[in-house]
Length: 319
Ligand SMILES: [Zn+2]
Ligand SMILES: [Zn+2]
Image (tube, rainbow, N blue to C red; front, side, top):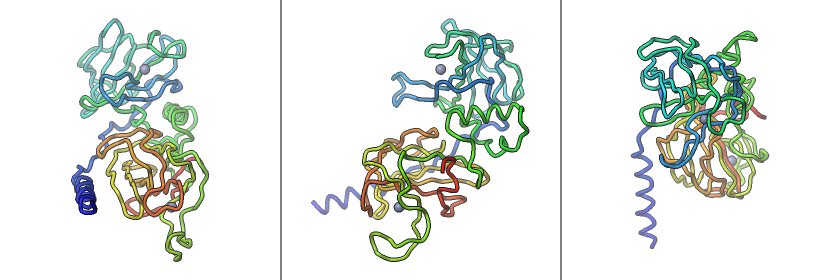
């Protein structure tokens, strides 16, 4: 039995090591929100292709509102699908979609960021307002959260004067995922669990070994089974067992607020996303547990800035 466990563990570890290092999608820059409206329905892709879900975000607007190109590109579709107007703009490796929209552009037309594409029509299914623009982002066959396009620009958004269109983009982002940025680092990580900080980052007496050492992250107390959420949009780099950290998941977020951020989630009961999978900010990725060296149910949350261990509290938007 013991031999079998060792073989199984070896399989798990070799699988984790063999997982491809996923890269963040190359998103067009600069980008802007296509309309001045609040996010009234977020991105909620289904686990399996044929299940219902929401493969974009809905922005509430008045019918007839002008839709702008979220980034520079080429119009690759402008017409009607099942009775609703749809526009698709290609930006190289990704494309943005807009519906329901009456197009004022034609296929093949080059558009620059912010240039008009058409006007919003009423009637998008599930829209709680008078009209909604359904804004989508796709890479190949995969659906991505279009708000990713705005997240990458947070540090720029902050510096612009009031009243500019980019601030509108910032406001949309704020409605969707919380306050814009941490005042100290310019980063915008969300709290990964709902619960109090039970032990901060820094030097402390280790509760397991009794020695004075660095506590490498922030502990959030929460009952086992509570949802763990991605602190920011990113790609799952690894999901593996660690003798001290227990069930550990590492997320890569790319360049955020001036540094390349990586977050790690430890001691979980388990995770529901695999290596290579893209996740949106706030998406549930697993559940709180007490695996590895742990004295009770909690999340040990770690932040690396440019591969160096950092105090997570300096990167969270809510403190
Ligand atoms: Zn929608
Ligand atoms: Zn800890």
